[in-house]
Amino acid sequence: MDNGQVTIRRMDSDNTELVMNMLAELSTKEISEAVNPQNFTEHENVARRGGGVAKEAALKLEAVTGKQVVSKQGAIQVQLQKRVKNNDEL
Image 1 (cartoon, rainbow, N blue to C red):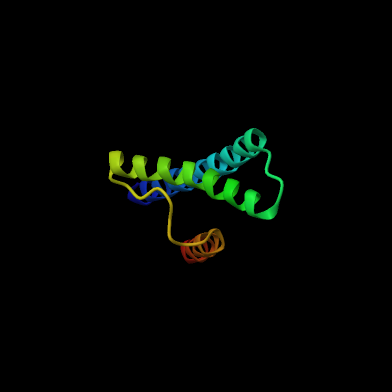
Image 2 (cartoon, rainbow, N blue to C red):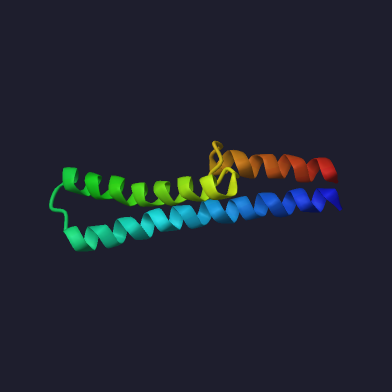
């Protein structure tokens, strides 16, 4: 039963990380539509601002919950660890 709880916590963390990525993308899109960037530098600024919205939300959520929202691992590393763990359980 304890093993199931660990899996649920990791899945929630994956979902939170996914939502944060979606927030960054949506924020960037909305800012881009409002600002209408014309060159690379302006697009880069919009992307940074959109990512900043998600970063601020993640930091606030971490402060309130005391839990890490975004893992330091990349998505590929997390998936590889899951595969290794699943193979070990067989």
